[in-house]
Length: 404
Image (tube, rainbow, N blue to C red; front, side, top):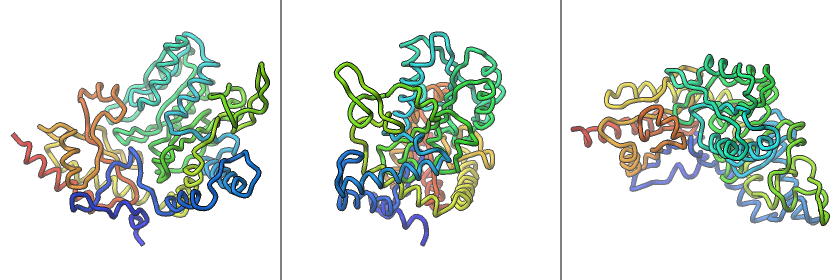
């Protein structure tokens, strides 16, 4: 059975056309096994977790914590170091508003990159307004990768106390030299956060090897459900940090005048969590494990090379970034001459070809490119070369329509 048959939505039609889904950098589609796990929860053991003493709650709690174990294994982390949030954005906010607020001070520098998603810029800008930290940004090289030499130079500044960067660009698809940048930061005792939202479904991640202090990603970009984010944090740091939200589940004891927080990881999971989706996420990670990373990377490398090969044949588009073999996700961002990105996306959508147009939550990056928006095509394992051919054919038709 081909991979795409395991994803029911891929066999729907729009306007009589077969769906071609090329917006995987925004969110991936879901395999049937994940959908089945979600339905099973509500049909067979719907209950709150960590609280009631009854058979339904026992089953729900057991399965919820099984997902935490699987995520910990996915990252080579400890169970207590895995915190469930709503998404990558909330995970970064949690770190900025607890660790950042508690351990950074006015004048300290937080180092980001010019290519960061807004979710890894705005929380630090908020902290800048609140306590007076400073932000600096790593530039990109001519190929759209983080400039290692520029990063090295900034990290020599003794005022840099925290590094928060992406592993790969959601615009260019470039997989940065993040491992070496993390090593540089660690050697200078700089705390680090790595945003792996774009690569979590494409390559193996080992937090022990990376030696980062925090790491974040979202389930919905890894064939999982929406509404589930993952925060990995070093146990010793999580224990030092104050609780993010107050309420049920995150407490050990509540008195009239004070309270004590629960042990990790519950300290950072206030209130009723997204139980069903967390449980269903285990099926998505099992799905990846059964495919193997070797298989995933072989398929995606072929797709990446073919996509670039065919796009480079079109002399009427401007492509941003550069495909360096082995260091690039199956993502390409471009503009078609004489046509706005939004028009291109809308016309492709009428043909059931789903792409993304806009700034992709990277306004600073697009301003540096001097363009108001780009069209982004992003693929994953269930896509095919045939679908790429359909895209190329339709881009030619659109160009002829807008040609002056």
